[in-house]
Image (cartoon, rainbow, N blue to C red):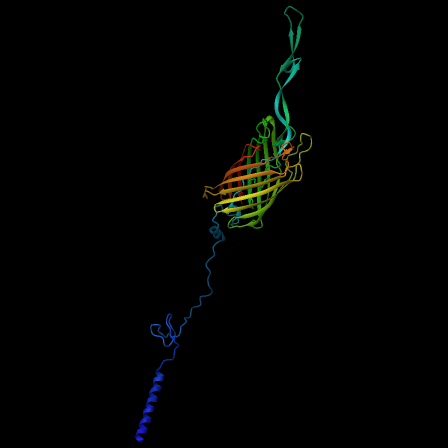
Length: 438
């Protein structure tokens, strides 16, 4: 009995020592981590997922490389070159881009107003009537001395001399020229339109415009003869406030040539121009603007009407509103303006103009960019619509077609304008404009 008890105790002691040795040999317990798509939940079959163990995550130590380095920035001009796809984009002297590059200027259409004057309208033969006979005008006498060779007596014969004598014929006609009988062009209302080599967009530029009018007022004065007019227009414009505002000056100079020696030269009235772009999208070129043209009575345009009263010489206020909208290479622009004189005898004139243009060739090097344009101008006088008035202006619809040639900062434009509503104010107008943008 004692031997059996001791053997059982020794057996239990040996089993305890073996279990303790096995526990010390086991590795530390690591949490089970399931791979994606597998489950570690107990009781799941191996087809549903296999639980696998992973060692603790080891995070590597990164070397200290300092703050992040940004890529080098590109020049602003390069960014704008990428962004402005319009073929009209033009750099300014300061390196930026100005909005004017999205459209060209209007060519224009207007030739001025007509003032009734007493001018020579023809000539006639001066005749005299003796009894029942109408004959040429006597202009003098002729003395003839007759003396026979063998006589001391001489005979003196005095005979009248007749010849054709022409005298001028005067009439009161509406003409674009005046100053008593020696006519000089009325510079008012000539070269003052906001659509004369201009647009709704504020621009840095200097410019020159030339217009030639053939048959000026010939439809109003049948039989009077052909009157032609040449006009030069000098001006400049400067932008302010990041190109959203501009101010400018312009001065026309005019020459007229008419029948019977009528005509002359005159400096027109000085105009001051103001623009403000309320909406000016530099990326698309779309623009909405308003402005004012103030024409001052500085020109050589004094004169009198046939009744002896002085011809008015007003200050002219010309408020206007305009827009530009672009369609890729094409654009459309429009202006509505009204001319308001300070003298009620002068013409109050409403104007509406619209133009379209399309850049057919972008140019390169010495080859210019080419942009054909077409313009429609509607002129509606609100006063002085009666052709018997001392001052008269008729309704006008004038169509202008031309082409702009652009070399970076320099643009040359050629165009022709034809009135399509009678009585036509002129037969045809030829225009040439130069613009240099700085």
